[in-house]
Image 1 (cartoon, rainbow, N blue to C red):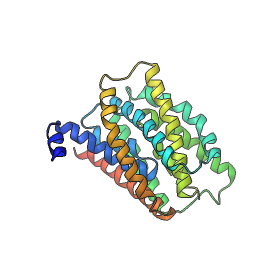
Image 2 (spheres, rainbow, N blue to C red):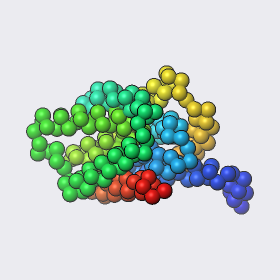
Image 3 (cartoon, rainbow, N blue to C red):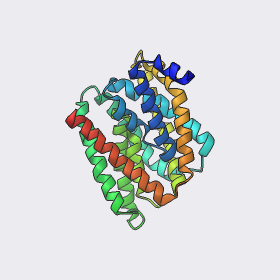
Image 4 (cartoon, rainbow, N blue to C red):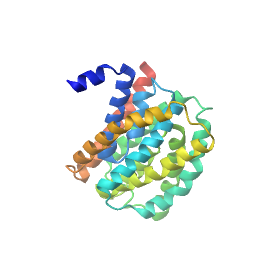
Length: 256
């Protein structure tokens, strides 16, 4: 009864915001990624993209620290070292171009690419394990460029990284932990750039702090669900989630 009274006094847009944060946080706790893309999809119709990305950065930092405390299982350090230079180089490019490139067009390109890569991965369990080292390194470098740009432009760098990790034969716990550590690093970097150039919105702090209870609850629920999955089920969930997310993103742009 108290909960009903509490929520009855909140504006519908705030309820929708809390719902989006909770759903995104469950996904993040389960898969190690996907929160930013989910929030961007659900909230881009009611909040400016630049504000959403800033809040995403701060929430991703908080979520990463929380998830590391409850579920850290080691990381693929060689993978992180290989993709970091390209990511650092292209994140500022994405942040700079968010005010220059049509945001809807970029979302169409990102969503279409996500669908294509997800369908490829569904048909192939791993393409890296039989490839020459030079081919793998080239893919990692190009992927890091794309991840950096997507991180700066739409706070969606984790999608490019999860595709690269899913191409390998790494176990689900190590994939998830690597994603958590990586996203912590890149979101600190992204938010730092926004703070340096003094581009933080006036709404940033109120949205961030009000989202925290729903973030922690969602992360924990997602973590509990993750513990019930094996590698095959984890991989299947992530790919289906990315397909649905990209399809919903495209639909929201083309039909609404």
